[in-house]
Structure formats: C-alpha cells, structure tokens
Length: 249
Image (cartoon, rainbow, N blue to C red; front, side, top):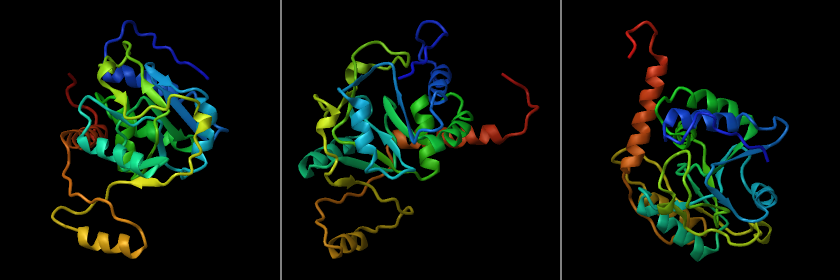
C-alpha cells in the first residue's frame, strides 16, 4: 500500500491543499489494476481490508463508485440513518445511492480516475470528497456503500481539520473483512423525478408487480448539502469555462 505525504506544513483544512494531496493519491493508482482505493489519513480499517474488498467488488458494477464507509454525525441527513436501519433489517450487503457522501475510503475504477481528476481540478475551493461527489453526480454514476462499513473514522487530528469525534460509521465491521460473504440483498434508496412530478403510485405498482415487497416510500426534497454541492460544482464549471483576461484577485 502506497502512502502520499502532505509536505505543505501543519494541517490547515484548506480545500485546495487537501485536494492536491488527494489528487496525488489518486495518481498513485496502478494502471493495470481494475480498482484503486484512496484512504484518508484518519481512516480506521478493519482487518484484511484489501482482501475483503476484492471479494466485495466482484458484486459491484465495473463503472460504479464504491465507498467502504457509510457514516453519521456532522451534517449527515437523517435519511442515511434510515437507510442503514433498513440495510440491517434486510441483511443487505450494499446500500446504493446516487450520492457520494463521505471521502474516508473511496474506491474508483482505475479507467475512470483520469476523467474524475479532469473535472475535479476545475472545482476550486471545494473539498476533495465533494469534488469526487460532483463528478459522480454529473456523470450519473451510482455509489455503492459496503454494508457494514469496512472503515471507520479514527478520532485523531486530520489534514482535513474536520471533527472526527463526531463522525463515525453507522456500523463498522469489528472483525476481518474476509468474514463477510457479500451475498445479501442490495438496498437501493432513491428515485429522481422532475420538480412537481409524483411517481409514487406508478413506482409502487412496478415494485409490487415485479414480485418485490415495498417496505417504505417517502417524498424527499434537496438537503442544504445537496443544494451547496449543486451550486458549487456548477459555479466551478462555469468559472473554468470563462475566457481568460479579466482582472485577477
């Protein structure tokens, strides 16, 4: 496992500096490999993490984003706790969403790292995980969360300067990742529609008609974090496309 050291002095939490370190970590990938895992400096992995992930990734679509962490704390919306509870109830092995929420342990297909970096480089002032999240959202890439989490936040100071003591996995696997079979169901949790369009009745008929049990359905709006991500990624792309020559700051 390769380690990329930050050489810019004491931790500052500056988003562009953290991205420079994360970017270097992504560039350490082996081009002959299928997947590349980036762990943040405060990651607390379970035993046999890499060997267990090899087994888990056999169940994941080859173009997906994978997170070995599904967390709580901070500004995490309550719906993620409900997803975690449903994953526990159903014995799920994965939770699938359209949104990447955390950056402590992200796995990307190596063939997609270049396109991710190309877009993320244009998102000045945005944190490293939200740059990856913005790229995933723009490319409509599903995010697969391992259940349980194979990584937790260690309660120690981090280069990112966030408060790790308030950020923990919903359920961190305490033993070896090789103990997990990854044969459980997949919990998929969100459907996007145009504003003002209610598809719940049609969706319920499709689910039940397909022979599946429908346990719960809710209508959700965008959280403040969703709005911030959309605004910052859109503004960053606009700034990158603007012609040069104006007065700098």
